[in-house]
Each structure stands twice: as structure tokens, then as C-alpha cells.
Image (tube, rainbow, N blue to C red; front, side, top):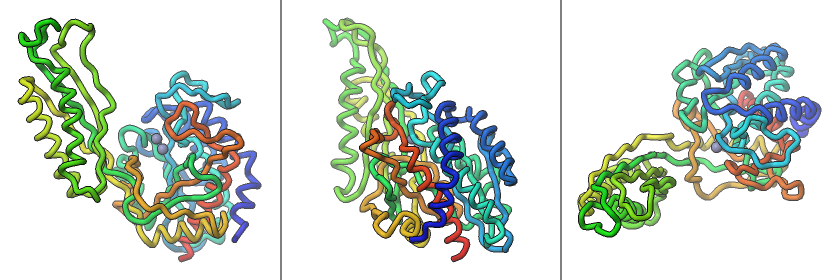
Length: 391
Ligand SMILES: [Zn+2]
Ligand SMILES: [Zn+2]
């Protein structure tokens, strides 16, 4: 175990708390992260780190090591969620209806902490460290916008690393090579029929019955059309229809997301969805309009970069600090776009603490990160960057 990075992270704990509390208290929604951006730029400037605005509300920083070498990028997302916070934290959100419920405040803090330590070690760095402060992870895929604006070039990035906070781990990390998050296809279905009085359904065409049949039928994409060993999930999260109990409405609208891990399965399942929706609506005598989009792509961890993370974590957090995940998550994450341009690894960073009540999962209104765990994230980023540049 190499305690140097962890000791240095502990030495700046007051700074980390101050930044973390400030960002948590002032959460900003995707594409509106202007104050967070200003704070990051100000902090990097104080550290003497070259930085500029990117992707409208993001920040791209770079630390040039004294010695030539490779370029590694460390990433943090910055955006909050439209959730009303229900914690008792002293630094609770003061923006009504907006909350850092996915830990992106912790990610930004961790990257600022790592930047502070790495820039103080500039003279012994072999290569460069790019700092990706990425906006809009939760909505439009800010990663793509950063790539379009050139964050992966000048100098070319050789590897990208990202640790997302996890409330099911304490003092440890979890990681796997290969696919780790899902491909997504969000969709909305608009049914149109003929409204009628509830006492005489035969005089109309019932969109509610048609939409219900469709919800059930869509599950057969997973259970009857996809191999039982292949991963796919179709979930309908929104169902809107009608206004009163005795009238059958003219329209119904449902929205959901289909998630897959395999690109071939994804392509086939998109066709299955269209066929099932059109067929069911036709059988029920109503019209339907399908709006399906290609959402985030799945994240693929490079085998060697995963080894870098595992070995760095063992050095910083101890020999038993790494849990190897057996399967991918069907969750979504846009960091995978960076990994299509270079090698990379995404891992989960434990920030739970049951005794202190830090147990609620991401996107819960009670979600809270253990502030004491932030030093682990900082030390790990420092170690990963150095280990990669020295490899
Ligand atoms: Zn999230
Ligand atoms: Zn997140």
C-alpha cells in the first residue's frame, strides 16, 4: 500500500469539504451549470492550471508535466437533477426543486482535489493530465459536445478514467472490463382512437385498452424474442390518458426506455418494438405514432486500463479494496463516448457509510455522499494518473 496520495488528499480535506458543500448547496441543471463552471475556472486559476470553457458550460483544463510523455484525462460530470432534496444536511440545496442526487458535486470536487495535488507534482510528471469537467451528463450527453469541440486532441488523449460514486460500497471500488453500462433507446408512443362514453365502448375505439395491451406485449421483446442469456430490459415509466372516469379518451401517450448490451440485439429489438406496437394498435383498431431515439451508447472498459485502475486502487485503498463485478449495469452513462476515441475505464467509487446514514441510492431525494470518502476518490485519481503516465 502506498499512502502518499491518500496522505496528500487528507492534507487538503478542509479545502475539499469547502468546495463540496458549496457545489452541493448550489446545484444547477444540465446545460445551465454556469456558476459551477465559474467556480471551477476560478479554482484552477488559483492553482495556476491552464483552463478554458468548453461545451458551453463545461471546463477543459490541462496540467503539463515537466517531462514529455503520454496524456491521460480524468473526468467529472457537473450537473444536478430536477429533484427536491429531502435530506437534513447543513449544506442542503438552496435551489428549490434542484438537487445533486447523483453525486456529480462529489465528482467535481474530487477532480479539483486531484488537479491541486497533480499540479503540485508537475516537476515529476511524465506527460500531461487533462481535466474534463463535463456538463449535461443526465440529459443530452455533454461528453459528445466536448469531443466535438476537440477535448480529445492537442495533445491526443491516450486514456480516460472516471469513478462514479456508489452508495452500495464503503471504502472500496467495483469494476469490470468489457461492457459496464447499457445502450439506450428512449421512446414515446402516441395512440389515437375515437373517444366515446364509457357506457358504450362499441361506439369508439379505446386507446387505453390498446396502450395497456401494448405495455404487456412489449415485454415479449425480452421474454420471447431475445435469447435468455442476452441482456435487455424494456421499462415504461410514463402512461398518460384520460381525464374523467366515464369517458374513453381520444388519445393516450406512453414513454419508456429500452436498454441492451449487444449492438446486434439493439438493432433487432428496435425493429421488434415497431412491429409489436404497430401490430397491437392495428388489432385494437387505433392509430399509433412511434417516436424512438438512439440514446447513450454502452460503456466498454479496456482490459489493460481496468488493470491500471485495479492496481492503483490496491495501492491507495488496500489489497482488498477492489470488487470485480460479474455483470454490467443496465444503467446509462455517457462517459462511453470518450472511450470510443481512446482507451478508458469506468469504475464505482464507494462513498456509503451506514453508521452515518449515507445509504440512499443515486437519484433518491435522500441521496447523500459521505464527505469523508471524497479523499479516497482524490487519492485514486492522482494514483491512476501517475501510474498510467509512468507505464
Ligand atoms: Zn444520474
Ligand atoms: Zn451520475
